Length: 346
Image: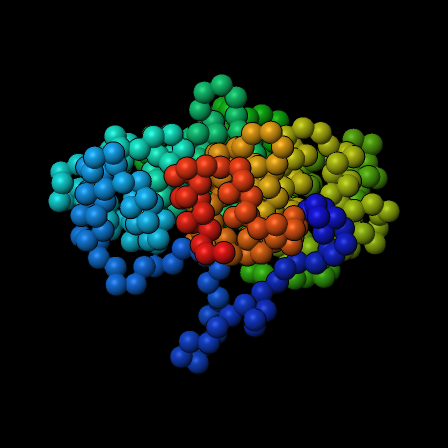
């Protein structure tokens, strides 16, 4: 089932309910939907020693490296990095670069970065050299919290000595650049509250700016789609359906073309169901001829401690097969092993 078949059949937001929470000491806390959790009985010094032995072993023990890095939380990996360098006088990143190759090296090095460092790396990779990876830029900005966007800006400045805003202005243009810069402001409403009157007004604004306007007013779409929270946008989509014979995603498809269309449609998808958005990304990365290893790494690493369990559930529902089964068919060797490890048991 395609993303938009689901979308068109049920324009509602996947809101958190009490089933998404667990009771701890009398208090409701959100359930954990990551596939990588803190390792019990963790010892940074022990893991650092195990990694050193695996790296220096004749032939390199890739399985051991995977079993450590893919089964520790990001906070635990940061502690391992510190202990490793203190014990061996060399950074763990440098040691892994000398020991590993190709896709496995890329994933392991990604796992050693903090979330903000990894996102900064993704921005750098998406804007460096010939061409720009527009999908990656939109994916990160549309799916991170305001705080995470602020943190990635700090990490990018520290690592690459440039402001991320300057890079986006240099590497993109037009309405697409405007949309990216709007998301970079990190001022999206994150309250989760829904204002029905606001939804009606926004729907009318979007209808007038698009279908009922000779030349589409893209700025109106950018302003609303980049600042409202997910449940609020979902209510706006419902109200839009009362004004128009077509859905908002279809209107965007008819009125816009190119990067800005893809950008705004992705924001719509994320606001409705972020795990389904990522499930579609992963499926496209492996569908047809060839595999986009960058997409697999980007999504599995960044969501492994956020909502990868939900992404796995959406994948199975949308494509009638598990993500792990698809990875088994489309990847091989130690690269396959580390991706499957991040997905957890199946």
